[in-house]
Length: 315
Image (tube, rainbow, N blue to C red; front, side, top):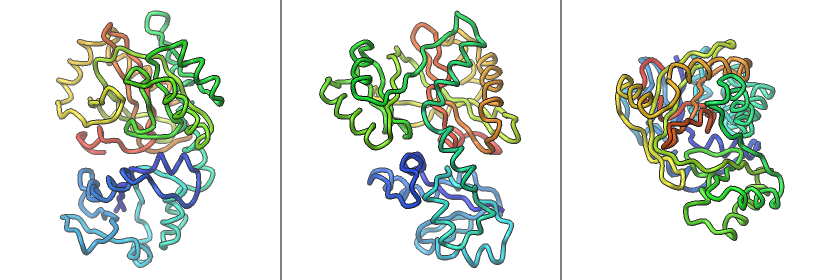
């Protein structure tokens, strides 16, 4: 039996690192509107946590926050599976009667937060370069802790991407080629450095398609769950996933990419099993394919459930 919860604010809460967190209004609105999203991966016997169980209906059992203490008193072996983990969620679950043994401890949570930082993609892409050789090498992201560093990168790499260390669905990302002038870029970077400590810079890409590989990591072993394809705006904002079947998606990927999906998966698996050896849970890797067939194999590392997983079986 699992307790499921959709909490799309998780990366923002990770960024704050605080035990009390209020998400941005658009993210909170998404959470409220999609509280029943866990129906997509729930199994018979699972329970979905919502704000007001009496106001919603579902084929699955719904509970509100005030129901948690009696629920765990009578069902002590429930497994808690949110969309993603963060300190504020853990604090709220504890305050509402969920036993600490059912939740990640402080050391585990600190490690998840560390791995979820976008600087992890520097390591992942560097390991990729070491394995695949010169033909498939990619530019490495760069981390900046000063405005001067950000602006030097911006001037040297027109059309570059600037990213917040923790964010999701493209909300903490700016494409400087998409109507972004120097003043706006500087203001944005200053705000991110103030709130999150640094900014990640990536060179521009002539992107033609976005894909993701979906994984489950357990006891140092990475299991490939499937491929997903999604759409983004020219500013990097997530729009939605394609509902194409796995076989067709694989054909599309191999037709556009200069490296086979089979090799991508085997290389990513090798890297994940080293870098995420101490992580247990779901993981999604966002990638992109450029017009010349080159791929960027580790654009994002999502240590949580992803929208692309909703269309895969047995997750």
